[in-house]
Length: 258
Ligand code: CO8
Image 1 (cartoon, rainbow, N blue to C red):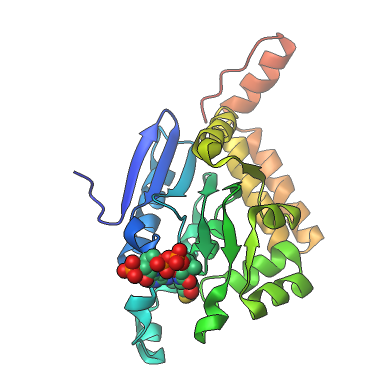
Image 2: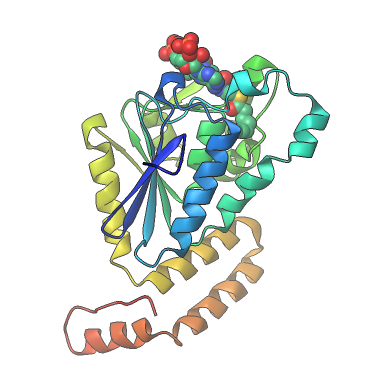
């Protein structure tokens, strides 16, 4: 029996798959579900067999946002005391690659969850948006920040103010989505990409992720200093010796993540 109530998880080779599992409400994210997602990802981040994580939704949506029924009666003080978004912050500390495989709706908190991942594959049926404005609120788990950093202020404001939904094609054109694929191929294509990344030397993958994330927040100078430290650090790894030796011996490298 699964140890989680609202998600399902499994490991396939070196890939961990986390499925949002409240399909009757389009995977609306209640608080327990968010706790479970963060817990599962943190566990897989420390799991020796896992190199890449894939996040997807069961049923006809990725996630249609925060659970409106659960939060409808909340007041500001309750939210402040719950401090639930502190949990979302922990997603930013996950070191391994996270790929979102999105089909159907990715709205509000669902879109924020997808944006918290490093890469995003979308099915042709995917629809993204921040409809919070339509119900008198606004994104609270990073949406205004992550979307703006990705597509710029002018475009982000229009989507956030109108609350309109964007197609997978538009999301691709805006640079939010890595690839758009046929619905029946979404998970297969995502796992294929995950496996490709999983074959790369894990320490390089990890330090590249760290450095790229710094590029979003740091100045160019600070980012380059950070990158350089990670570059130097990789020369303490067995995989650097193995990778370069294998190149010189014209054979395939065998990376161990050490
Ligand atoms: N919360 C609770 N229940 C939901 C939600 C939701 N966000 N979205 C859908 N459901 C439920 C519906 O109530 C319905 O349940 P029932 O069958 O019992 O009536 C079931 O899912 C199916 O939905 P619909 O019948 O409405 O399906 P449609 O295909 O007609 O419409 C839509 C799909 C367009 C997605 C529609 O359901 C909708 O507009 N949903 C709400 C979208 C929304 O406003 N999302 C933003 C929520 S606010 C938010 O995310 C704030 C983020 C803050 C941080 C995150 C913290 C976790």
